[in-house]
Length: 374
Image 1 (cartoon, rainbow, N blue to C red):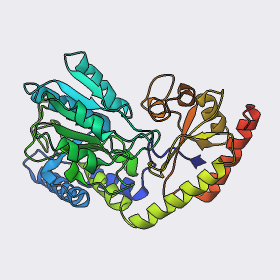
Image 2 (tube, helix red, strand yellow; image 1 turned 180 degrees about the horizontal axis):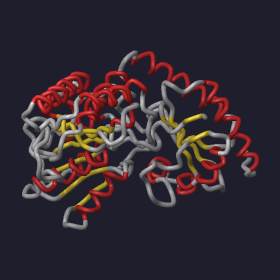
Image 3 (cartoon, rainbow, N blue to C red; image 1 turned 180 degrees about the vertical axis):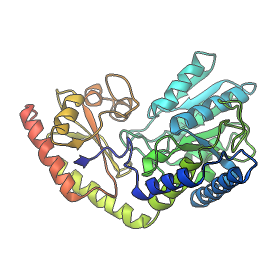
């Protein structure tokens, strides 16, 4: 099998699975219980939170555990907009956002909020002058992802933050799902950030919202003691412990892993340049994601064709709907390219042999489907 869909989800690291199983067996108590089993479970959660906070450079009190980034994004956006609606009902975001940003924003739009999409330059980067122009007296939230999940465009959160910080009442949220494990994130640039453990070789069903201490938001889930007043429900001790383990492992030998991904990325581009495809990702994209377009055939046809060779890629993000990629269109302004694209996502686990296997099968399918270069 050649797996090239790491941006959709990653295989769970064996050590993470071992941690999850061990905690399930040994820490059976409800961490809210006052007896010894409950106290032991709470101590483990507290130790895990300390470890996560240290790695990310945040405070343990700033971690709100969620079921993943989709919940974290909804909590950030709805939580801020409901809490601070007396300040205004204006939201700014981009066309490059994940559906779990777009959907809650559209929900709020139906309920009286105004939404503006900031312009992007020719590389897909946020136009800082337009962002400054869009911010109004009634703007309460700007939500811009650190890395787009389909094309890989990497935004400069520090520069974006400098614009937003000129307006103290405006809060800045970033979906950093595609950044964690691939780069080191400076959380001082944002007020809130969403994370999903499944993107860095951890378990599915656990993530968090990093929320700056002192910032109050409206919870989405009420009732029941938890690790924070901002998200009710019995804390998932095994998932939280495995989250800490996955995060620690992914940042081990980080520089070496990053160099390997860059080498694999460059090797892939060298191979793709010889094929009749258009490369949508650019030099402002993280090397972990390469998005390409081809003429005439549906991306699903190519995806299933590659599947016959036991090779796995994505068309759009796994959570997307629609006939074309919003992200590819936002970067290329070409609906044909946006409607005929696939995403190849890489990892430090990806090998050159796997790239060779993919390129050979991809080339055969392009020929079989009558796609030729000029």
